[in-house]
Length: 236
Image 1 (spheres, rainbow, N blue to C red):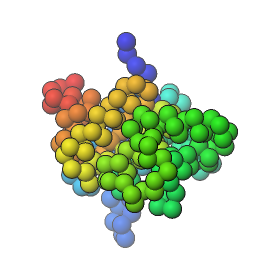
Image 2 (image 1 turned 120 degrees about the vertical axis):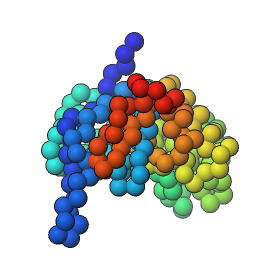
Image 3 (image 1 turned 60 degrees about the vertical axis):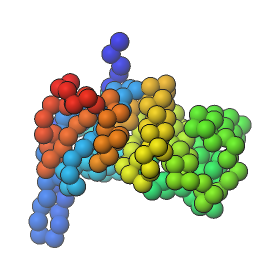
Image 4 (image 1 turned 90 degrees about the horizontal axis):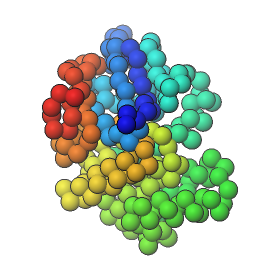
């Protein structure tokens, strides 16, 4: 069964101004990511990976073209609407975890639910469920500085997924992890993507990660350089 498209870019262009120069970041990108799919964006620095993450995450707006979330056009220039969509429908996983050091593990995971106004009992239930899914329930009362790098990244994944988002944006999520821990995090992301049906858009230089994703899109100078690839490097 073909799964529904969660995020779609149609003819997207984006430029940035650097002093007197106009730099084309994206040049006519067409891209679809479906529910339960892990999509890896690859390419050298400056190829457009981070720009795609920012646009898919509604942090920035395209100059032209269209972005659709669950089939509905979104206007990233509408700050109020974009904030609500980021809060309710999009999860973020960062290379450096971005955990709040003075909060416990449970409080870090709970924070997006608190911001969304979810009732306390439901928040507690969902935090426990998320921490159990990433294998950290016994660390709920610990602070981030008491955890290893891999454990912190698992907390970040729990925080992203506790909202039950339709879309997860991940920026180099394994770059600072050793090989064993990276494999564990990738296993977890795959299990949660396929189990919860979230679409993952992942920017990475990490070959360990691209080999485990469902699909690879290679970028160069703001363009997709060839047909999308499966994780085995075959034409999709």
